[in-house]
Length: 414
Ligand code: ADP
Image (cartoon, rainbow, N blue to C red; front, side, top):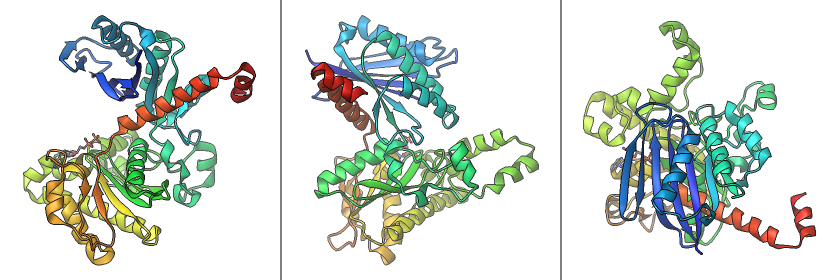
């Protein structure tokens, strides 16, 4: 019998799932629950030859999991729950506990619960999904894949904020970084391409955006921080700002800290400056403010590429653009590389850059000339492939442990 693996990505009010056959990585079914917790919630399920949409109040993530399992069985996508060999869960925050993906046990669940302080919007739904799977698929191993884990190799001088030390020791205030599965995926792709543990600057520019500096295949620095609000200007997030603005605006506009933080996450960035958060819409606006938003975004990316280039003392094998904007925004890539060219020698190959985008025939490849000091690539990211890979690996390692004599298992699990 072919093995099936379920991947679950639970957001604050959504739950996405995909069911794969392994090791072929064939996608058998996928689906999304949206507006969980509200009466107009709905879900869609897609298979190779069918797509359904149901409108029905889904009050929480556990209920979404129950409906999902019911639909998978009822539609004959699986005939029996025993066909599912493992479940991979995307989890927002692994704190300092997790440098890599892990098999979920009670201790992991307790830690994810404790780390809800860093992910109050995401962790409750993610925990509720994990617990509901435990109930519907008893004994099936589950894996947690943390958005922060890949960045745990940063040196302390890069992850500390210059604030009172007790804030770090007692409250966990430090840079953790996010989009870890994407940065890890791109690092592995580039390792295969270059045949070495690479030194990279990875520009993951989507609605959310982060850059990372990779040294010998490991994360050395990244732009997101304690939360995803830090670093680059994004679709609706401000990125780094003078933190005094918060108190000032609270007083001036009679807003609470929560309201200001919400505005910095949801009403700032491209949206705050131009009135639109989607880059394509901003590009179409053609107003003074949209032009300003575009140059601010470009500058924000250039500043971090320059910072990481100097931090790596110029020892960079490649720069990579990925995610919605990185993979598709041809003109932005060109402007960034042209602005960097006089200093770091990123010489664009205009034809190649024009050819490569998600909506064109070619969606990946080199976009610089042969004499460029640093090659620059576009590589489509695939966070889900990374989650699937880690889940499959850990579940199979576990199987091998259990296949050994009992004494070995005791030692290994002690
Ligand atoms: P996230 O996963 O963070 O929600 P994505 O990686 O899907 O975001 O990226 C979304 C962004 O990509 C949007 O700002 C969108 O405008 C941008 N994008 C997608 N296609 C294009 C395109 N053809 N040209 C410019 N920007 C694009």
